[in-house]
Length: 462
Image (cartoon, rainbow, N blue to C red; front, side, top):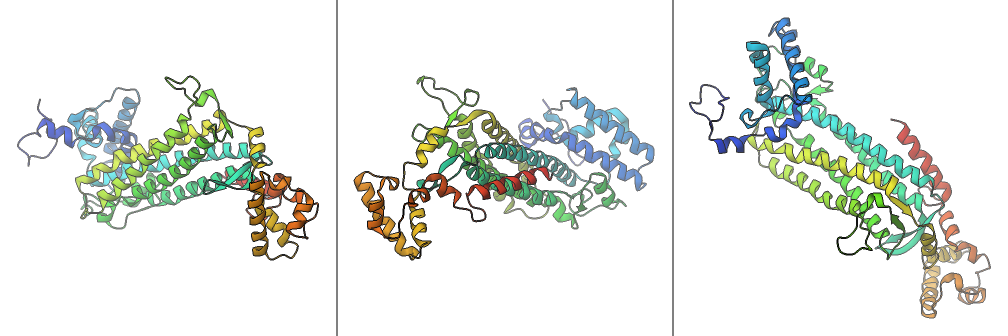
């Protein structure tokens, strides 16, 4: 088998078949075909507008490119390794459709600025899709939170019981994380949305092109001001992978909590059959595969970020073949983030049931109200640090006696400090412990209700 020769007459023989396969990117950059066609149509229109080709030739090119789009969508355009990459495949097919005028499409551009344009058009669309998926995920979080403002759950620090909180407050913490993700993607979008088209191989072109016009046709905000930077910049991809990694961090943290909560040791949630699997040998098992997979796939996205950073760190200007390696990791990170957001949204909406009885028992059977005892004394004039030490003492003696704070008699409280009165029991009840934390951003029910409304408003702004 001989490789089709696609280069200039500078070359006398075709690539070795193995090298051709090694060099080819068509098996993954076919992902860019729709964006390549769109970018090429804008380039053709610009060439015609500037008089570099005739209006009739411009129309022929645009029509031929649209035919290729339809052929691809209908499954009739399936280029192989002989095409090397999607850009050559499109150009070859275009010449078949419109004849020699198809050979004029590449006037005033290089594959270097062409692939940069395609990648930005692709990533721009993917960012918008991911933002939409984040909004769907947030909507489910808010829906569940609205039903659980007064449902209590143990709050933890160091994975030790700390203070009870509203379940809604806990879920809204993830709303805030993903809101930053949504906003961060918007920031990345602005740096993705810059056109390198017309930068050429590295130094621009001798043709009187209008880069701003083609950028306008493609809805880019602006163009690269330096042609060397335009063809070699992958900062936007690194920024996206960084933002994607943070999305996965947040999904993975929630996944870890769901895994813990669904264990018999916690028992805070029950997994529904639609989002769990069984064991091949232990018939009693119900496994949290969705959150475990999300947790596992997080490292995959981290890896793509690291790979991109390492690839870029030693590249001299301008374009180098190394940059072909930017796409597979980018495509996989996009697909992984989208799949994980979709799966976690379904898990929350359809696959989990919070165990109210178990949660109620959990928040009533520990010493997570100890801080409230200290606050009780501090509100009555006892210096907080003195109160803190007194409560530490009573916790120690209560544990030794096998009691909880709610089990102490009023006389035992007064032996600790005369400031204690009968209202201590209400002050340390789990519901009051939560309700009393009414500082801005706290877990108090009034604050949580306000936070819910703000979250709903945030979602509805788009």
